[in-house]
Length: 305
Image 1 (cartoon, one colour):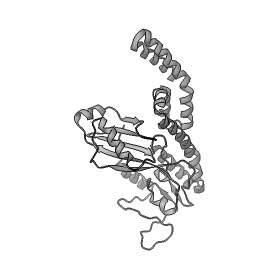
Image 2 (cartoon, helix red, strand yellow):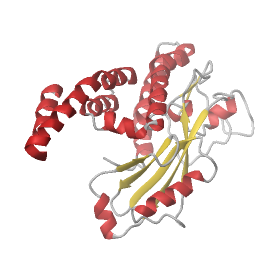
Image 3 (tube, one colour):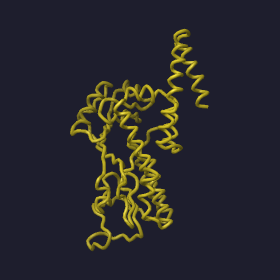
Image 4 (cartoon, helix red, strand yellow):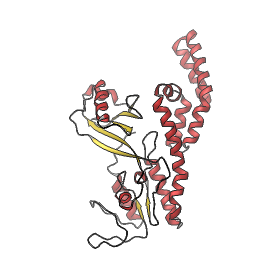
């Protein structure tokens, strides 16, 4: 499911106000200073939760996350013909193997396609050139259209993400998933850890909690990403086509599992998956494609039940 996030700030503001908070809109902050600064508007608070994104003004002003690692992505909202629109209307498409340590995507929206590309530390100009080249294969023209760039902060090591009174959360803390580039789950999780730190008076423990519950998970995700992006064909055959692996990722994105469990389930299922494909292949030799599919469905249905 794809959806716009334009309405989220208003929702968060209403929730904040309902909980006794103060929400302001349309005020851009270029600097944060702890203490008094006569020329600037003053807001008094016991603590500050910074959820101001990958280019966090708070982090920059206070010298936090100075060794941050960044990936990059660009996105284009592309008008296309009705034929191309119908081709991609059913589901998003992800394209691997076209750029080092990255992938491209095509997301269907109501009246156009959202297409983009992301990669870890790409060379200058590489993202746009690759996006134009690959999209042209699908009948999608992106040259001359507005390009939206997005830094993607990656948490790869224990970093300074807090002070005695300030906690970075979400993208501001660099908590994007190194494997797929998704950040909503960890924004929510870090927000809960920050609330716990404030309510229990343990703000000095926040960075340690983040590293233990998110950072170590991200280390495993980064290792899986290196394997996947270096061996995309092999990983597609043994991973993407493996229903045990796809179910493991469903549990991951539903917050029912972390990367250590997902990796164990993927590699643990490989002998069964390979044996099943061999048996199904033999059945297909004698009974045709339908028999092959029936054998696969029966085995995987019982194995995943």
